[in-house]
View (cartoon, rainbow, N blue to C red):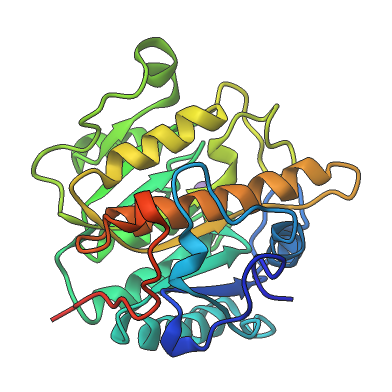
Length: 303
Ligand SMILES: [Mn+2]
């Protein structure tokens, strides 16, 4: 099944701004399991979405859902497979939208983008900082993914964090990693200028669904109370995209539960909303936000 097949036919890779990449990786899950079923649950639930995301028609820019990435090998081979799938998407000026799967997978689309350009930062929505050097014996753990990104010298900004270990507090402070934590959002709301002015103009966006409040998103491996509400999450992503370009994104850590189909639907709707935010962020297609412009041949220049 391809993403949002009820509203849009599968586009060819050349005609699709969005390449949906299902990545059912589940290797280092530390608490609740089931995230390998996340991509399929999102694709299934996307059938229920409407073409209009509340502001625009992101699907009119073309959606191509790729084959499922092979996650049968070890973590490094999973990452290599995803990296190889993302690279040509960037090279053709399109946006990879990876559906997880565990959060460690984010290193792959980030590495692929980093191999063709270095002028970007990573914005992370999450309950956890994911900055441990290793966790339960694995440097490839979901709890370490942002540390791996940081080691590539890529600027990071974290939103919605509310569960940190001592090592991560030290890392955030000593490495000056920017953040807007959940408590601050609860107290003061989302600032319209959310990212520091010196944060790169180009962004890779990674959204761990546990960034949402556990009441809204209980179907995830490590749910946390005190998280973002729906509109807070969308406002935060929209604010980070203001004046910037989103070049790639992922939605990770849905661990679907049959009795909670609202969570699968929420993750699908979130994915589509982020696609809309990404599309509206790109210079040159601002018209489409208003008119539902047909612009299926739009490409991003990485040169
Ligand atoms: Mn995470």
